[in-house]
Length: 183
Image (tube, rainbow, N blue to C red; front, side, top):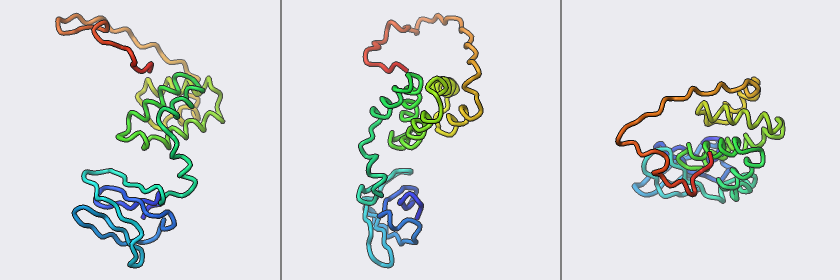
């Protein structure tokens, strides 16, 4: 079992009580169920997931320290990032949108928010702008921008593309932008 209290079974991940981290467990599968046993005793049971990369997590299996983050929501993380600046908020929003499930981006977002304790807001904002422009969506790349001082290098303006004229192009006036993201 992995250190994150999940067992990988058939390319999906199922939680077990965190006390069993790094212990060897047995798994019993049926068409609908995954049972996890430790020394012959069932310690967890989950509905079997189809597909790949799905997580099935019981709250009771989480360590207390992880349970306190359950009240985290994507909107709350974005609002915390907005206190740093609009580009940082857009970057956090992009990370959450880039994952199949926003929760999978929480760790990266929390890491970025922690970096604001080490770096001034101006540098965080510059790093976020650079990361967004480069299409980066990870904590490590964001931290690397700051660690290597790349946020201090001014961004080159992008060359303006000539307007395209075609009968099938509608232009921005066609689309309603009410409620759209500001990023």
